[in-house]
Image (tube, rainbow, N blue to C red):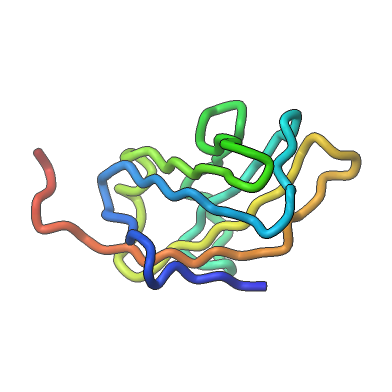
Length: 114
């Protein structure tokens, strides 16, 4: 399943990005560990950023809500257009893909390089 964020905030290249995702069911239990990779396109071999619950890029808010934080240093490497990510629970054996791909618009800001 692919999910786009047309009504949510765009990633502004060079600035920190935050987005909360809400699931229909409790897929983020208290003990879960999550990982995600950000790429410019699904087919790209290079990873722009790896987000995890351990590095603070993914934060469990509740059993149904997770917050994504992409640091400014990572968004600076994104070309205008869009970026993609998915999410995997790494606390399970084997790891479990959460069955979505998120495509987020990326824009180049007018105010940059401050």
